[in-house]
Amino acid sequence: MCSVFVFLNMEMDDYYFMKQAMVEAEKGFHSDEVPVGAVVVVGNRIIARAHNLTERLNDVTAHAEMQAITSAANFLNGKYLVGCTLYVTLEPCVMCAGALTWSQLKKVVFAAPDSKRGFTQAGLSLHPKTLIRSGVMEDEAKNLLNQFFAKKRAKKSTSIEVLKS
Image 1 (spheres, rainbow, N blue to C red):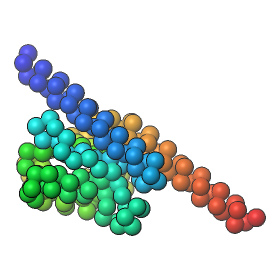
Image 2 (image 1 turned 60 degrees about the vertical axis):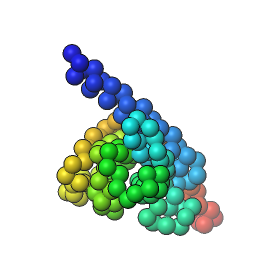
Image 3 (image 1 turned 30 degrees about the vertical axis):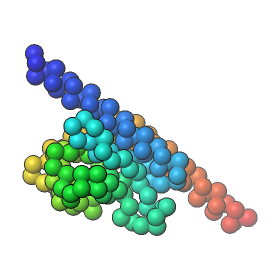
Image 4 (image 1 turned 135 degrees about the vertical axis):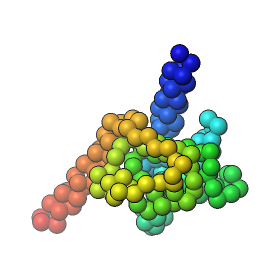
């Protein structure tokens, strides 16, 4: 009976922290960044929050995960994130997976899979001690991404129509 309670608490925690990552993704959405958000948690405390900043910083490496790793490492005053969990709204890409592997996180939880650039799609794995959970708030994350790209496509087709006129 006790182990069921612990599992349910863990699932509720994962949902709560993924919801916080979704808040970050929405910030990215409203800043015209690909809406991916991330939070790093240790001991049920958020120590880093981030969203994509690739457009704002003009930096292809400014993914939410990279920003969150840097912020968490600064908070902890060390380069390793042992004992920490990363919650991110989209499956990390190959670049981010490399950084996550080096950071030695305890756990990575992602919402939506990335069938084009995700690390699992590329056949990669993270640090051998890192637990991975996927699908937490998957539909919500996918919906936000779909809204963002639909908005981008609509802008692009409007621009093309103006050029044809």
